[in-house]
Image 1 (spheres, rainbow, N blue to C red):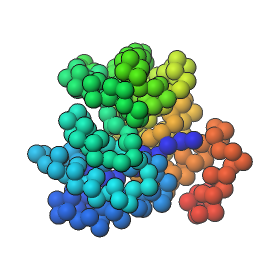
Image 2: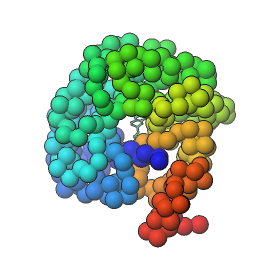
Image 3: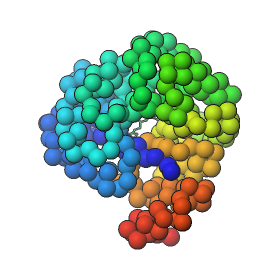
Image 4: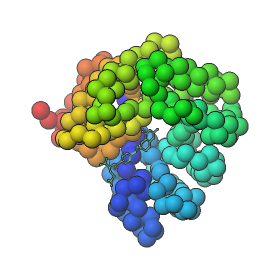
Length: 266
Ligand code: THG
C-alpha cells in the first residue's frame, strides 16, 4: 500500500514558522492530529528554515509532537548532526530524510546509519548536483542501494528519491523520472520510491492538477510513497483511486472507505 509522508510540519511554511518561533505547541499538535486523521503514515519534521535555530527548533518540535504521534516521524534535515540528535530523541524508530551521494553529507551519514534498522530516504543527488538523465538517476540509485546495503540497511528500508525537476524548464523532465523509476524497480523490486512531487509543476499555473496527474503516473511506474500534504483531499483521493486501480487495495476496501468518509468523490 502507498505510504503518505505528511509534509506540513516544515518551518518553510509561514504558519508553522510562526508557531515554532512563538513555541505555540497547540498549533503544531492540532496540525499533526489532522494529518494523522487524514491518513499520514509518517509525519515529516523539518526545522531548517530559521537559520541558526535548527537544533533547538527540531528538539522543541519532537518534544511537542511525540506525545500525540500515533505514527513514526520522518526526520528531515540535510545536516547529519541534526538527524543524529533527533534520532536519539524519538521513541518509535523514525524514517531518516535524508542521505545523498554528496561526499561530505554521505561520509557523515554512513557511520551514523551503520546497522540501524530504520527507514532511509536516499536522494539521487551528488556533488555534480541534480541528475541530468534517466540513466543518471538510475546509476545514483544503484550506488545508494549498494552503499546502504554494505552498512546493513535492508533494501526494503530504502526509499529512493529520484528528485523530480520542473517540466517548465524541459518538457522531458517528466518521462526522465518515470523511466528511471521503472528501471530502479526492475533492478530492485524491494526498494521503495518516494520524494516530493510538486517540483514538477514549478513555474506553471494551476499546479495542483499537474501534481495530482503526475502522482498517478509515478505510481504506475512504481512510486509507492510520497511527501505530500495529506489535508489536500484531491491528491489523497487520486492516490487512493490509483492504488486501487494498480491492484494494491484488496476488495477495493480503502477506496470504499474513502468514499464513505466523503474524501473521494467524482
Ligand atoms: N524530498 C525529500 N524531502 C523533502 C522534499 C523532497 N522535504 C522537504 C520538501 N521536499 C517536501 N516538503 C514540503 C513541505 C511544504 C511545502 C512543500 C514541500 C509547501 N509548499 C508551499 C507550496 O508549494 O505552495 C509553499 C510554502 C508555504 O505554504 O508557505 O507547503 O523533495 N526527500
